[in-house]
Image (cartoon, rainbow, N blue to C red; front, side, top):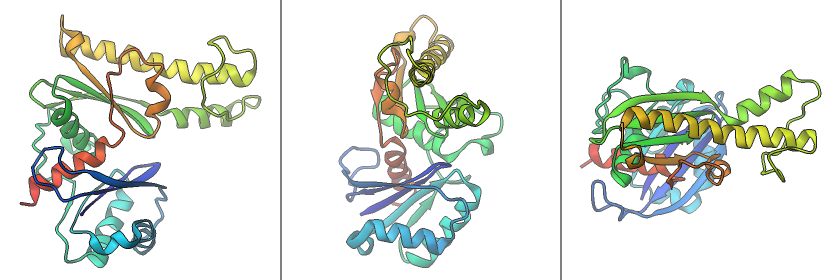
Amino acid sequence: MLLTVDIGNTNIVLGLFAVNRGADGEDAALLHDWRMHTDARMTADEMALTVRGLLGSYSSKITGIAALSTVPALLRELKVMVDQYWPQLPRVIVEPGVRTGVPLHYDNPRELGADRIVNTLAAYTLYGGPAIVVDFGTSTNFDVISERGEFLGGALAPGIEISIDALASRAAQLLKVQLVRPRSVIGKSTVEALQSGLLFGFAGQVDGLVQRIAAELAPGAEASVVVVATGGLAPLLIAESQTITHHAPHLTLRGLRMVFERNIS
């Protein structure tokens, strides 16, 4: 079984895949997935204790590990954890020098988060191109993929939860609200007004940016651009967006599986 680990700024997501048969095929089933809160102060031992606790009896059945971290401090601890607790297993930690098969058309590729590259590989493999991946996480990432699978760049915007927290902390009379669909766009209370502005406002932001990107990516053929939503907050926006065409909740984990097979033969 392949253990995939995606360490983000807000959450750590684990995935357990059955043994694969093809490099990029979908014949490898995602058996289980888990999500836990990210703590940048976590040590390798603490991470291992939590991961092994979640895996339970599967911990002894792991045959390979593919992982990434967008938190530099935890990238170091991730490597230590793998070396100490699964030293005998083949592993791929996605960082510069790892083969992904994704051409990077970016001024400084070292600035790119590993998750954006892995998402590009998975989205292009699963849906083709041209495409846009909208990753709803700590930030909202718009990753642009050419018809040949090249990473072309994108856009970054503050994430939904960051915006909610910032609004609640900076405005004395505006409380942190549960992000659910209000009765109407015209809020009849402060809570509903906040919910309307956040939910429909972010949906409008997504649609506006996607339309602008698609116009540059495929002039005159904007409808050919695939728009893939992923990330923990994606389900909140999908129903309100007019441009998202696919929902891939485990896109990063599937991309990690693909990178593992490109590097471990």
